[in-house]
Image (cartoon, rainbow, N blue to C red; front, side):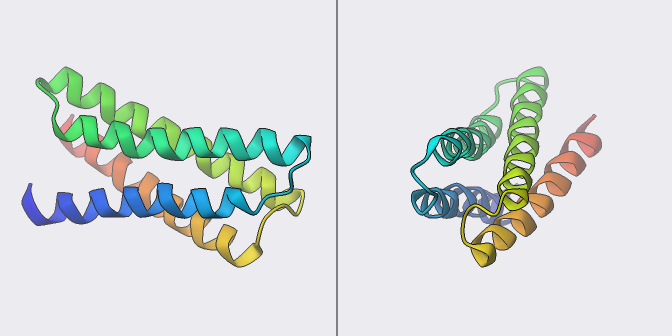
Length: 116
């Protein structure tokens, strides 16, 4: 597992951290607060569940944590698409986050597929 997992962990951490910066710049109105809070939760949860997946005690636990992480990534992606549709947030930052979350979704789906 070694180096590749560490790199992937760093990508999850960077994605969650960059989402914090993106959300801190969202408008403070009701939609900005709602979608910003949802995005913060799902991006952070994807990273935290990835971390739990790495320490899984069984194959069932591994699959469960990996599946939750993937679900949270997909929620983050959809949230970013909604924010794009309504023109909220910095376009460059949002596009960077969308690109990264697309890649992370593909990676996690492959990990789950290859493991089971």
